[in-house]
Length: 125
Image (cartoon, rainbow, N blue to C red; front, side, top):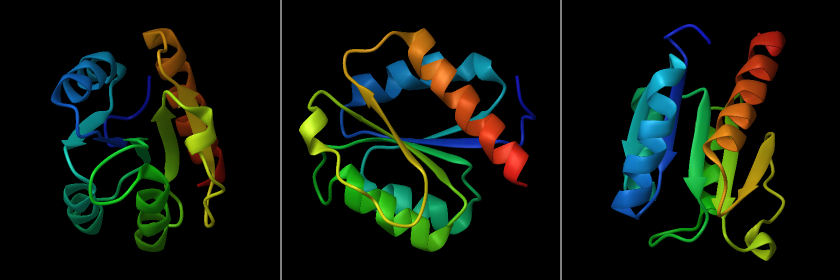
């Protein structure tokens, strides 16, 4: 699909969801990193170049919207995909392009969005 150097960071406080997302993205020829907490995600983003951040919205410490804003400050070129069961949880995040995926979703929906986001990122670089 893409160069293996593309890095996707998944953030979700639900261990089952992290495993599920990892399993869906593993075959996509991307480097998949996972973080159970937003603070872990921020540490990873400070140490690695992340191309796409996929985050749950409802989490302890801070919600996915705030996490996205903080990640944009570290890497303004990152693409963000926020996942939630409630559409009303999405707020306008300043600083970059944010997409939204409503739970429940099919794996094909996630993969399609990831492909679009990485293709868009490749066109801009």
